Image (tube, rainbow, N blue to C red; front, side):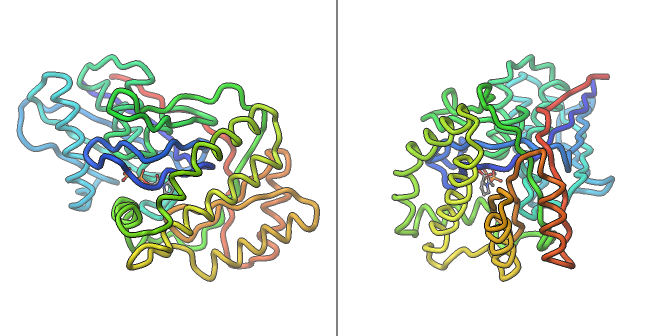
Amino acid sequence: MSATAVAFPNIALIKYWGKRDEALIIPQTSSLSLTLAVYPTTTTVTLLPDGGQHEILQDAAPMPQAAAAKASRFLDHVRELAGSARAARVETSNAGPTGAGLASSASGFAALAAAAAAAYGLDLSPRDLSRLARRGSGSASRSVFGGFAVWNAGTDDLSSYAEPVDDAKIDAAMVLGIVNAGAKPISSRDAMRRTVETSPYNAPWVETNPSELALMREALRRGDFTAVGEISERNALRMHAAMLGAVPPVRYLTAGSMALLDAVADLRRNGLEAYATMDAGPNVKTLCRSSEAVEVRDALAAANPGIEFVIAEAGPGVSVSVS
Ligand code: 2P0
């Protein structure tokens, strides 16, 4: 039995940063994202005749050890759910950079969850697939769905899942500014833990989430692009503020990131509505109207020679085919 899944990264407008349960990946707060139409992960899972070790390949070579161990634990969970003893062979490739804060773990675990579930014969609802993907990587719960998705934090394995935001009335795109496509210096998993354990700004980050999320959902429902952009940009800055308060501090943003934040503010001063968001890496994603994405990209590229800018329209949820 073999199944191939394709999943896309998502970028959060209301960020997930910090867990209340590390083992089950239950977040402290709910989050909301836009799935993109660039940088898909394609993953094939084939069941092997026997039990034993899973074989995990990335771009036709053995996956690096830490990532392979994470994927292997995830496959153990799937085969336990399926009541199977068989091991799996995984072949995966990312069209975009891996571990650079461009959501490769979101597309990666959404694709692995869908392909593994299908290969092991689990017939999961979208909600249960989202719960499964969450066990691999929190943000992957949202990449199960296309467009805007909200991950309800919940309090346990059953209540923590993502679902589509089906009443959003804005047509948004993102312009990805690739400041640095290299792997991040500290994993988001370790950085979140440090923030939760040591940052005095973690508590206010958590306390303000429900009202910010409610404002975001209302702005999406109204089709109020300006409000969506303003809430997104301040949410990203507040997440980075929380991590900057950790001991020792977690700082993903570089001088290049700050230059792009200035460039995005300049666009706004010149009447082009654009808002910045940044994740666990230095790259800056600029939220804009889909109809203005080319103009935004060209303006950012003109002001920042040497940086690559990629337009990402809203993308689809995970798809899977069985052979
Ligand atoms: C997000 N990020 O909401 C936030 C914003 C990065 C910054 O989700 O530990 O790879 O596997 O659950 O999902 C990155 O964290 O972390 C992330 P784990 P994940 O997109």
